[in-house]
Image (cartoon, rainbow, N blue to C red; front, side):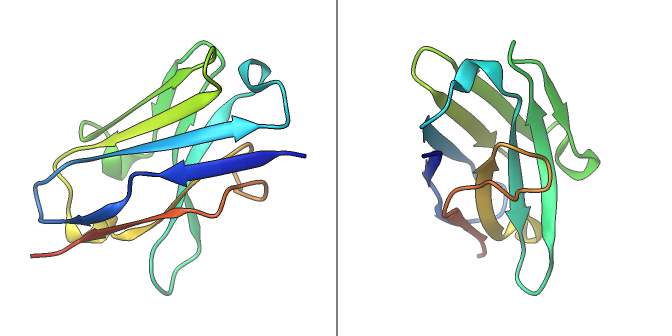
Length: 114
């Protein structure tokens, strides 16, 4: 069955950085566009970045220039580098196989606070 396991979250001060990882299994990873989505406290799921099969990325406007994303198809892995973090970036971050986040992992918590 499809499994997505995220890791790398934590507590960081504003302006700090984190690197999230997602390990995929149960499907042919290299054939799928993948996504990072997030859910802030009290809010719905929000699409953050789309990572195409060739690694091409498309970011949501609020994270452009601060976040980067990549994938390693040989390792069935997806990555999200979060830089210049802001308190508004506080959320549970998921990797997902669809933009709506219906098929997603358990998430990894990112908290940005001083």
